Image (tube, rainbow, N blue to C red; front, side):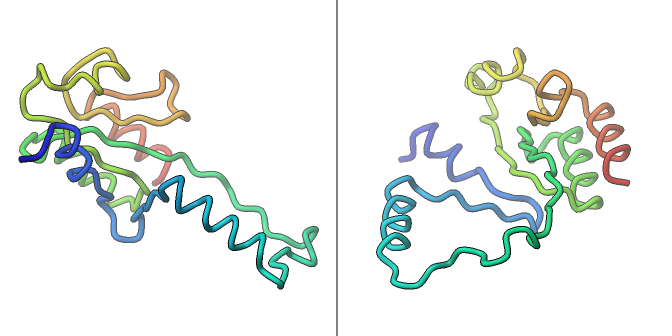
Length: 137
């Protein structure tokens, strides 16, 4: 039987196909850097001044429930606007939503979290939809 943490970890996924996100485990990342350091050929860009500048887009995390109509509305807006995001499905029982409460001070969903948001998060589906449409439409 899975623990709550394992269930949350399994439920975490990207909602948009082009927005899939993979996290590299620290041990694997270290082995990759060692492999790169041992490599005989250099992967450095010979023309760093010609490197394109990439605009930094905010990274969003959506805390939601699949059965919540307000969450469904936000997911639809994120998908229609093709906004890159990670989705975390919170436990059904509100007393088990400690992680969400530690971030936002509340246990209700949906909650959109990003460092680029004024308070670090938005917690009302109408506000979230308005913000996303304003930023990405």
